[in-house]
Amino acid sequence: MASIKDPFEFQDFDDSGNLLEPNRDTVAISIVDDSKFDSQTKAAAPSVDAYEEDTETSDDQAKLLSGQKKDAAFWTFEYYQKFFDIDSYHVKERIIGSVLPWPRKNFIHVYLRRNPDLYGPFWICTTLVFAIAISGNISTFLVNLGKPNYKYTPEFRKVTIAATAIFCYAWLVPLALWGVLLWRSNKVMNLVSYSFMEIVCVYGYSLAVYIPAVIIWILPFMWLQWLSIVVALCLSGSVLVMTFWPAVRDDHPKIYIAILSAIVAFNVLLAVGCKMYFFSKPEELPEKSVAPTVGLHKLTT
Image (cartoon, rainbow, N blue to C red):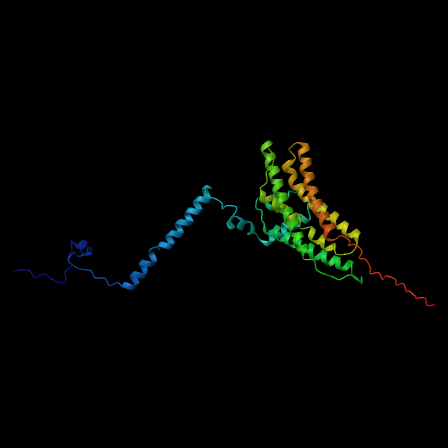
């Protein structure tokens, strides 16, 4: 009699591991949203513009790190744009440093730190030009006030003359000084060299002290005017001498004495020239004289 197999009897499955394997005969179907797939693909794939920007940025960084990126030419606006990119805090610091110089403090090393600017010198020179022209007109008006024969007429030509004098001093004198220092640095190897923009920046900030001095020149007191000139000359001249002294001190004594004397002489010439031309005492206006009339009497006989 054959034994009947109990269906509830525990069975040992030898091929249990095969149950976990995927069935090769089955077909897996997955439903994916096409719009979602396209958006994910576009987000994942970088655009051509982004790739070009990244390439240009990486090229610029590589050139900066390797020092191969060329500067713009000096006749382009890009070259001078970097000299106007400065914070107002640094401009204020440099103005204070030029008005209140301290011994053994080089203006270029302490305040410029190899980062000259043209923003401060440009506005200092422009402000000084209008201050000289306006103060000169006011001074002339106050001196002649009350004279019966005086009629006030504004002298606009003073603006042109003041602008020519100030900007020529702020650009041509630094150009000549830069040429001399470059010539001497080729002769003497251990001289300190300054760039042209650094010299222009120093000369521009050294004129800041003349702005309050020019305003004082409005007052009709000759002793006060000359006192303000002397104070402004001492402050401005000391900034220039202390700045350029390290650049010439290792040169021949006759050479550095001549250079420093020329720096001081041009500074004195500018201050005294502006004082004598724009604030000189006007000549006395001639008073209208009435010619006496002589009455002729006809004698009758």
